[in-house]
Length: 626
Image (cartoon, rainbow, N blue to C red):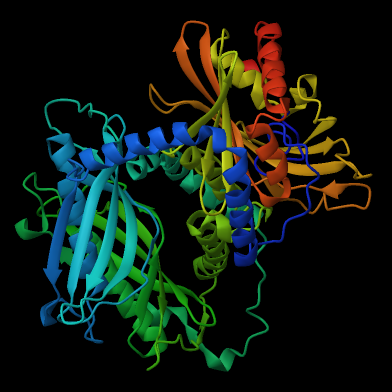
């Protein structure tokens, strides 16, 4: 199991011993390629794994039995709400008002959170929401919410919204949302019980929730860094001022008095109610620019900065920050005060909403340009441009499927946080898969495989008598990889992004009959456990850098998803697992190792074990500060 950099599947040479020459894959995995790979796997496995059919059949029988046992299973935190859309719920287009939908979403999610916590909960934040479909009068809105993971006093709730036409029985996905709720007791501190995921979907969401939580905690700093470091082109002077709408014409201010129907039994204003009021003023501001009925398409991630109670006055202010060709960004700010004589207002929330104007064919129309006022107006104008770029990068990186992504994606300040998130999340989702099959076991080193329609994945596993943190630190510095992996000829640290992420340039010896060595540009992302029972993680994937383009001297290799997980099994005892999602370039090599015709996987993993044992008391000072 030689972890070669050439294994274009996960980590460049972390490709546990994949030593086949790697042809540079296309920027996207084509349907034809996937079909050919599938045919190749079916033909190859029919002969290669014939001696393991009885083992796999037994495994499938166990899986089927488990499925039968879980047919009636329902997540204990799951809450469902179904609402018929009535005329009183709609906007000027006779479609369900997004504000009303947000109230239903928040209510459903809150009930799910309280079902798990056993006490009142309040909305802390809402991740990006992209609205895919509008809902008409007479249709049914089905909302499902469940707790993905609980932390100390907060929890992530996943929400799915589907619309249903009762006459045609057709259904459409409207949106998916992720909300964070905080359990609240007045007289005692809340310590939430952990969730126990049972299905593969629940295990995946549970695992990735920790990475999403990390993303939320750094979100504000990410925005600040982007705005400070990302140069935004100033095109104001080149536009025709006669065809521009002054931003001040779109300004809206509204005051709402929080009454008992707007609050929960603790007297705190429902987060969904505040979001509905925010959507209302944002829609008015957008209408003043386009002189039409706009449609809300997206809400950017936001946090509730503080609570409001019955009797508070909420001042909601909205203005169009920037108008692009077919969309506009509206900024909304919410402040609260208690008495009219108060001069200090509490900042409750801020949000950025993206609107479009649809024609009769539901296609976005051209919008007028906006002319910002000098000072803060110009600052908001440029920040909106930066957020649009970041939003597009984030939506692409975070939401698209792995098979739809190029193996190497560009690295720049606007997407680095989300590439790191996607890197770790992809590995965690691979680890959470249920249908791994034991292929071989040699001297307590186990090889597992996972076959699906697109990829052949494998992972190696062993127990090592080394402290878990030490093993994690030793293997997270790729510069030491050549000490135990012969497929890493040299490793250069290109960019130390932050404490947890680094980009390396790896050179691998020539493979097979290829005269050229391979090189890789690898993003290595490491994570410490979020809770007891979580593993330490080192995730690897390819990125592209302007400073390290492909050169004639090397054949560029790429890796999609690979890395290490470390579980603490006891004092000075660690379970080390290496995962790799193989790409078409080295399938033959993988199947050769899996079939037992080659021992490179095994030899490389044993060399890794010896490296950990020899160096367990010799950690680099720079890594000991983790």
